Image (cartoon, rainbow, N blue to C red; front, side, top):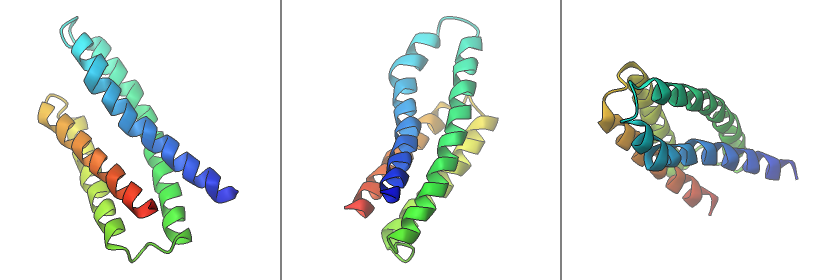
Length: 124
């Protein structure tokens, strides 16, 4: 029962992180991009950023617990997933310093989808 809660929290945090990116790309950015000087866009990005930090913390804690519980630390798929997590984290930090580099948005999103794919394949 407790591990179901850990899995649920992991999936909820992943849904917030990746789902939030989908909403930003599909709805918020196209609407807000041309409306003003970018103040609203920065406010939305900042708010999403706070939630993202919490989601990443939950993902790290629950992911480590799940990897230990399922004895996955030697799995090549987990190593690839963790490598992509580190690369994505680096790109997010770079994006925070250079928010106008639009290509980073797409790369971070694609890497996030790849991380989810690897997570699903580890769970199967």
